[in-house]
Image 1: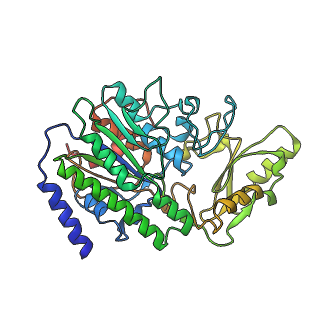
Image 2 (image 1 turned 90 degrees about the vertical axis):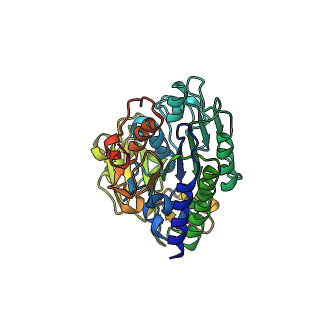
Image 3 (image 1 turned 30 degrees about the horizontal axis):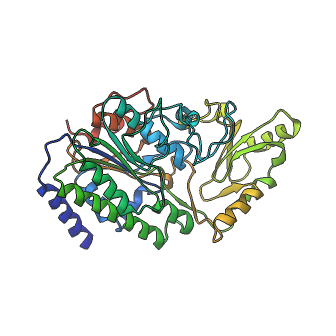
Length: 403
């Protein structure tokens, strides 16, 4: 009852605000690791209020693989990771030196697709980005008009205040498209598991930041089109549900590109590597493996040269790594890993949050599950720029829009 009253109060507050005559700004917010069903836990009254008078999805289906950087890139380019080039959080490219990591900002890694803020800038629409993978990377010398690269030390409240400050700029400099990112829910899910009180606390903290944003918009008389998404969900990792890849294959005979919940393995032309490939393609317990040319079509993965020769989906709740990787993981997380993502994109535990509210959106609409690449054409429609060729379908979210 208390949460319902708070939600109704917020609805009334939004309805009572004086409206600025400028075109409605568009604000895309990512809450990393916010599983779709977290919305109904009772920890997020501000988000729930937005959903009550706007649009929510049963769940949004992440792109394969269901990890952070590929999906954040899919959301803002409308291209599946196989087409946007960010095929995992870490990988190599046969044509490039070194290895891509979440700290990589060399344009060559990011040049296979164009994020919405670059398209906006080219169309004369100013953008402001408060953290997003790839935001600091120039495309033909172009970056957002305003941006901050990721800095964990900047609090959620300070992030919101920076974004609101951009809206206080003179009209000639004020961004029409803004993006913002929060990581706390994902971090709590990994460290403590998705059903932990720590996740609920993280949800409440981010929800408070959303409330701060809404109050700041109302105080400025701004009615914005707000789209709130997650990149993926989160699944519990059970005790003992970890396998050493070394116990399945000779890891010295292959090159393991990535592991954990999704395996990517390059196979050299040697008899030992061929034996490892046969073992993997026989689908050992808790793994489903494919040659890259045989990856199921609905995963939209395998044509990019960056994709390794063999890709394996790990069973939900399990983790598969080399012993060396396990050791590094123990060093980074001495209390263990209690939650993970990267699992089957169709598993509801991987389902991501989607909600939207504002003058462009209908009220009290619930969308059927849809792929996250549809967010890009939606954003392009909201800021009235021509979308670049992409894999998304506006029809997947058309029911959310007012005529």
